[in-house]
Amino acid sequence: MTALLLFQLRRVLRSWEYLFFTVVLPALFTVFFTQVFGGQAGSGAEYQEYARTYMVAMMAYGGLGAALGATVRLSFDRASGWLRQVRVLPISGREVVAADTAVGMVLVLPSLVVVALVGRFVNGVQLGLGTWAALVGALWVGSAVFVALGMLLGLALEQKAAGAAMGIVSVVLAALGGLWIPVEVFPDGFRRVAQAVPSYWYGELGRDVVAGTAPGLAVAVLAGFAVLFAGAALAVGARRPLHAVAG
Amino acid sequence: MTPALDIRGLTVRYGGTTAVHDLDLTIGRGETVALLGTNGAGKSSTVNAALGLFRPAAGTVEVLGRSPLAAVRAGGVGAMLQHGGLPSETRVGEVLRLVAGRYEEPWPVTDLVTTTGIDGLLDRRCEQLSGGQRQRVLLALALAGTPPLLVLDEPTSAMDVEGRQAFWATMRDLAGRGHTVVFATHHLAEADAVADRVVVVDGGRVVADGSSAAIKSRIAGRTVRFSCPDRTGLGDLPGVTAVGGTGDLVELATTDAEATLRALLTARDRLPELEVAGASLEQAFLTLTGGTR
Image 1: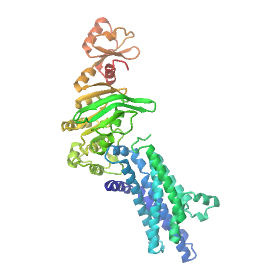
Image 2: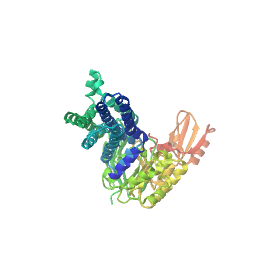
Image 3: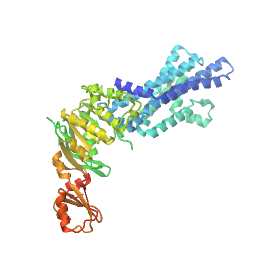
């Protein structure tokens, strides 16, 4: 199991596109937007508030992108015939799914940690040590929602469709969930739509932790989405075995 | 000792079409068996059912005395599939080490690399392999656990002539070491060169089963082709086993081309567009099935 996990991890980390979109891009956005908009802040407190909010949003953006990008690769392995090959080796399908899920969870961490470090040391975000730990921990656990969604897309779609879906879904989730532009500036209707997507609640989870308020509602909604996506992924997996040939 | 492969009453259906009809096949340990047939004959369906890749519509399959999946999990079977592949963003050596690590008695890697002829490829990215190199790497994966049974589905389809020869030399060597080798092919020459038993599959049924020499003598006939609008009596000529061809073109499958020609030339003044050629596999099947297809 460990050997398979390391094997899969190494493969994802060889993809520079993956690292660019899930680590470098969110980190650059964090610096750029905080400098551009935060620079217009009237006071130090106002800047701090802005830098903090934007860092949390970018951690959420990076985390969901990393979770989706790592897990959707299951469809690539189906297209190449590797999953079919695995079926005639002593490696069970359950193990493959478990390894990919674990890879998704592990690879969320670099995005979260790098954006947090950039927030702290480039933008000067000030939080207590406990709050930093709670923030990274909460967003890490919360990313399970997007790991489940990525597994669902990877199992249900063919390689090309899955690649496209992953791009579209992460953009839609980021935009509608208020991770790029805060929902406060959304018109009324859009704000209601925002509350229907999991990414909004993922961001809300981070904001709650930073503000020191109990994230009860966010946790409940995210847990609901996680169960929904994981259930759908299991149902798709049961109907269509991993080794089924595409088409 | 339980047979390497025991298939009883296997029936495979895809939607409305039946690919395999009530097929029985028992392969003993240490045999080298070719499943010979044209495309769509039901070879792949039989092989895939033997590996437990899907649940057949009817029939049972036992591999080394267990269910196919259990045999695969226990490292008893190595397989090369038609639609198998290698993972992206990996090097050959990494994949080989991952797979070898799953077996209790892995084939020592340095020897496996030499046996399958993939020396110098271990640091190669899997995406950069040629078709033939890829097949050899897949063979190495199939052999990684020193499996007693090796199942190969058209393994040489992506290889050039040289690659094929090297591949079959490896197979003969493996058979010599006591491995049971079952392979699907549509090349009579491959079946003849490697297998000691040939099972001819056509229309999802076994139409012939025997030693390579016996099958060859039955199907390695000749085809006499000529143009003639009238076919009466042609089937009764000496040596002729089947009458085929379309329109005016007549194709006689014969086990004795000389006798057939002699009789034809005695009876007729002219034989326009006369040709004598080695029988194709399709014509050989026509002979085996008595022209009833």
